[in-house]
Length: 304
Image 1 (tube, rainbow, N blue to C red):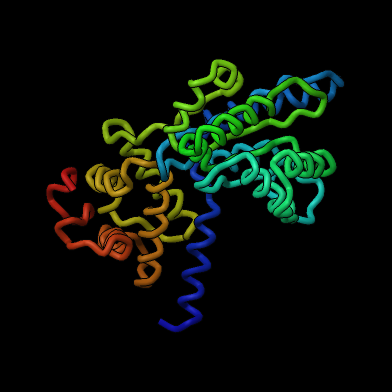
Image 2: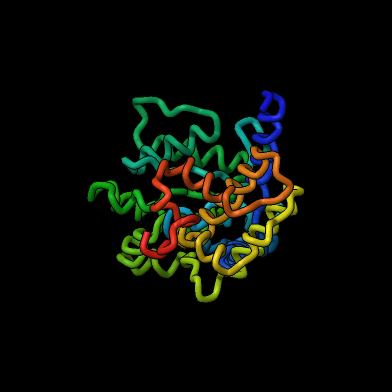
């Protein structure tokens, strides 16, 4: 394959990543976020103080949490921005493994295009960050990988928990917090009654082969249509869908990733349709496994 053809495949695959495949969990996320944003906008029009509510989107890795949040915001006409843009209605900050109030504040400043000074404490950093939020009309703060709060030290965990409560206090220019992360954060959320009451929790569920096989086939078909490639009859069966769900660890976001990977393999083979062997190759390339451990090949795949 020449370099031009190889680049074309990468470009087509990258374009597929921009396609959002809707699903019931994503719709629940959209509803929860639309509710709090709607209440915020109504309060702004009325000129009153707004007691913000946060949203906690939780689920296992690969469930599609972050993509669902970004899709929910885009449905409200809010799109991701970069340093230098104005206004910046929302900001996405990814928490580091060593979460602390100062570290989260420093990461927030970085998202605005500024670095925190080594001499600045958490209070000084957050004063600067809140100033940028006010000037750039930021009213939504998305904190990703929120489960790191749970593994923080006692003092850091308490200060971060207090901060999450402070964000939803009544004020004229409130910030809507959206926290995104693993289900383990539920322990922190439910450890404080005020925190639990002020955050609407949306839990993304695992896919279930008893009810989600057709959903898997429909999702693959959406990607195939976008890629302008056909689907072989072998990947339209419930057996293939069951293998796809198992390979994806029953996570919707990971299932979508395998759909894209299978299509990319079909493109690499210059095939006019996606077949089971393309998913076999995609799984092998990702995991470097023996055929007996490849759920797209193995007879007893549920036990892999």
